Image (cartoon, rainbow, N blue to C red; front, side, top):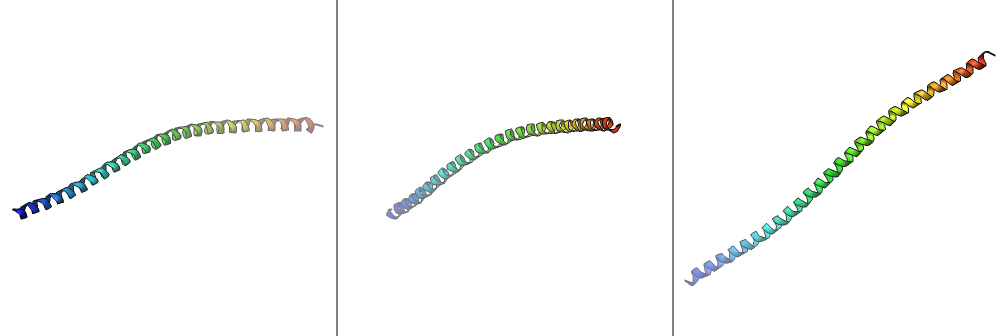
Length: 96
C-alpha cells in the first residue's frame, strides 16, 4: 500500500509540475496577445496618419498643377506683351 501511495504521490507531483508549466505558458500567451493587440492599435494609427498625409499630398499636387498652369499662361502673356512692345519700338524707330 505504501508503494501505491508513493506512486500516486509521484504522479501528482508530475501533474503539479505540468500544471505549473501550463500556467506559465498561458501567462506568456496572454502577454504575447496583449503585445499583438498593442501593435495592431499602433499599426491602425500609423495607417490613419499615412492616409491623412496622402490626402494632404494629393491636395498639394492639385495646387501645384493649377499653379503650373497659371505660371505657363502668365509666361505666355508676358512673352506676347514683350514681343508686341519690341515690335512697336522697332516699328516706331524703323521709319526714321
